[in-house]
Image (cartoon, rainbow, N blue to C red; front, side, top):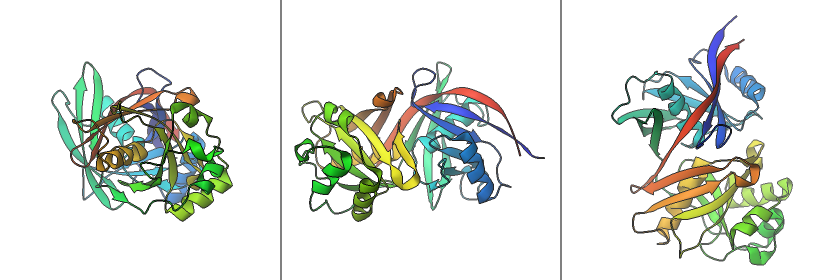
Length: 291
């Protein structure tokens, strides 16, 4: 019988039960892929992250959805894992900023942590922006999202953007249109496949108020219907808006997500020049997992 320390942390949350919950399991080098998938299914969260040793970085992270799909990129799955480690003293003193390296798939990416007022804050750099070709037409996209064609803003064009995971960026005309989106899973899967994207990030953005965006995220390709906070989508959104010259002079963006789900999340991104995602979290559960 094997035992592991594990629990839940609400990432990008200002209060408990906000943000995006992440399950974390420590010291999992001896687990098989099948065991990790079973554990992720048991936790039944958007993602479960497993902490491992690495010969390329300070830690190796592997993350699985409840349906068993492995996900990559540096989003809430990674930030939450490091916040968990920092909150439980696994990284030593964080009274001054310290930078660590994380192995996620083929990438080794930096993350900086610091304790501010008793809470650990993290900022994490993603990979450089990669853009796919814009969609030729948005008719099928509008149908898949359960929206009218005029709900989709023409610029920036709907296209897949990738800073660790490719997601389809779809600007809608306002926040009300974002909240009205009611996708058809099968139709959206077809659109995403044609776009070369994993998930779909619908967002409202006003160039006259370029500090903020309002978003929802759908990812039927990995069995995740709606996500409360998606760093691997907020990062490429910021980078895409920056490439289009739409950000403020400081090249920063705050994305509000999860409101429709009752789990308001705030994701802070800054271009440095690659997107750097920052936030904090709240540990809501810690215990022992027995196999």
